[in-house]
Structures are given as structure tokens and as C-alpha cells.
Image (cartoon, rainbow, N blue to C red; front, side, top):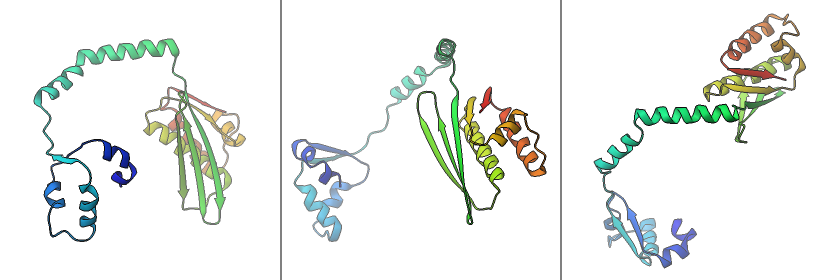
Length: 198
């Protein structure tokens, strides 16, 4: 596939394949049949050499360890603290959505970093849920995902006024199931340094 896609490189350059497998002997056997014979014929027109892979030299490993020694680690932490104090940590943004049908509940999550990196998740729940239950499920999975990614500052943009007011404390969760969902969200909320919801 590579020889077909990069035909012009294969024709104009010498190719060195680093491998620990006996590729040269396999491709040069006279009794090849089928696919290997086709590969051998196609690749024989190019200037390909096969060389064994060499082990990493011990000095390069020692240099790598020395580059990441503890005294440099403290310097890197200090630089990071300085950078954070200058710019401040902007929160990640969490957007959620849901879809309900007779087969179950579908949840969608989008996490967006301050640098513009976007992570999109789609979750299929194989159970039936009410509209509010699916809203809470989406929020809980979104917060859990953010915690797993070691995100400490998060701003949740949510399309359910009821859930937002439950979390902010403006509305009381009277239903027992809603109250248990709210307890889970409050527990997850405590794991963030900065948490806002709107």
C-alpha cells in the first residue's frame, strides 16, 4: 500500500527497512506463491535494503534519565506556577445533550479546553429514563469524565433550567430519585477547584 501511495518517493530514493524479521529472505524465496509473490515482484523494482534494528545504547538512556532528574522537575513546576499566575487557569467548558426514544436514552457530551481542544462523547444508555433523569445522567457522566481527565476548573453550560436551579440550590429536589441524583452531582462538584453551572 505504501509503495503504491508513495510511488514517487520509492522510485527516487533508496529505502532502508529496519526490522528484526527476515523480510529479505522471505521476499527472495524462489517458491513464493500468491500474495507474497505479487509483493516480491512489485517491491523488486525499488532499491530496498533491510537492516536489523539496533538496541538503544545505554548512554542515551542515561542521558534521558538525567534530563528528567528531580532538580529539573522542581524548576519545571516553578515555571508552570509562574505561567499560571500570569495567565490564570481558564475553566474547561462542558456542554451536554440528550435524546430519548423507545430503545433507551442517548447522551452527548462536549468538553472544550481554554486552548480550543474539543472532546466529543456519545453514550447509549440501555434503559428508559424520564427527561429530567436523562438530564442528570448526562451531567453526572460529563462531570465524571472531567474528573477522569484530571480537570480541576469547569464551567457547565446546561439547557435544563430545573437541573441548574437544583444544583445552585434555588429549587428544591422534592422527588426522591431527583434528590439522589442531586446528591451525586453535589459530591462530584466538590472534586473541582472551580465549578460553575449556567
